[in-house]
Amino acid sequence: MRRTWYPLILAPLLLIGCGNAVLNPVSGEAERSVMSEQAEVAEGQKGHQQVLQEYGVVKDARLQAYVNELGQRLAKQSHRNQLQWHFTVLDSPEINAFALPGGYVYVTRGIMAYMEDEADLAGVIGHEIGHVTARHGAQRATRQQDAGLGVLAATLLGAVLESQGMSGAGQMASNVSQSVASGYVASYGREQELQSDQLGAEYLARSNYDPQNMVNVITVLKNQERFAADQARAEGRPVAEGRSWLASHPSNDERLRNITQLAAQYKGRYSNEGRARYLAAINGMDFGETAEQGLTRGRQFYHSSLGIALTAPQGWKIQNAPDKLVVVNGAGDAALILRAAPAQAGRNHEEVIRNLLKPTQGRSDRMVINGLQATHFSGARANAQGQSQAIEATVVSGPGDKTYVLSYAAKDANTLAQARRQIDETRGSFRAMTGSDRAAAQPWNLKTAPYPRGGFAELARRSPLERAEQQLRLINGVYGGGEPQAGQLIKIVQ
Image 1 (cartoon, rainbow, N blue to C red):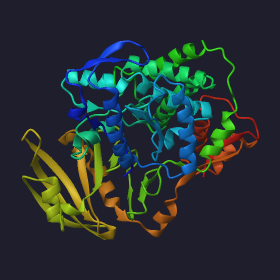
Image 2: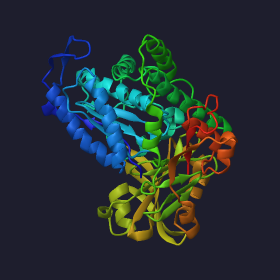
Image 3: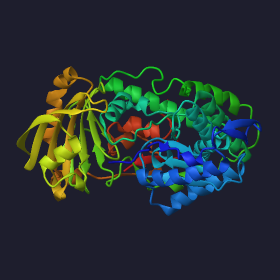
């Protein structure tokens, strides 16, 4: 129900046989590659359309122009300034930035909410430009072809999704989903990420921004980890330990040490006038999910355009994805997964069960959920290996003549049995939005305001955020301590 990035499948015609020698613009050395520059550009053009379809773009021409102008200035100082560069702000609350081969760079409004200065955003963009200039995508494609793979994945800046409590749940949801792309999302390797940090600092210095701001960027990611850990402790959930996303990816601790040492080597005189421009650019920007994507408010989920709502059990989390809503337990091993059935799936519940669930055996039982007609199915189907697999789901006729499938999911039968009461509770909360639901389903905006004498405690009293004081500190770059000066412009959420 909100958009995410899925990997690209490399078109075979774009590959250069077994690879040719190509000059790397950054190192100046020849390297074997299965992608020419022309192939990089073609792959980027193709992938760009997929990204726009999956995410959507922020519909603010002023903000898009601001980010594009900043990106173009940095790209002119890069090792591949001859490319036609494209910079886009994606309509996603995720804290993310990535690049595609050939000069396509993306930042989400989610990551922009946590930047404090134009130079911070320049550091994010410079890092992603570095992936393109050093031909990291082409290098990855070459290694994957050597390994017999055909997938080119975008990079996640910092790979912080797992530290935000998304690891087990995200993997579990992917495993049970039949519609997620067959590829995988992967970060670049350790050396490539560290090289992009180095190139980002270099492009900042060339563009008259202080490379020290690269330290700020990595600190933002570190603070996200700290906030996620503090939140887990407050909710009695286990704190993620170590780096579980990819062993080859450098930790934010390692990146922070490296970039701090690197930034200290630059001794130039740099502009420090970008904060006011940046705050003006993001003033009024959506914060968190939008009404069109569906809104998560604590344990409640509201989707005004679809007219549906749902409540998560105590201690469970709501994950709002582009094609589904996942309500997952704290351990990340059991969930209820909500999807809208496509119109072609069938005209009635029996057809939807037959066409979407593809059962080999089982039984259906009619029921009513909050006034909505429903059919619960439990049985089995054949998995990809032809083995019998248990399946359980409820098909519900929702508002607006739309049909929804609520699938039970768990790592094994015992886990499902232990979580059944909470999954049934979640299913039982599915409803057409009421008047009180619509009143509660208000989107949030990022605004600038003078810092009051009462500090964040005063701001928290009139903030809609759940952990307002901590989150306000987080978006203003002082989660680790410190206070803005009274009257200084800061970011608030309304």
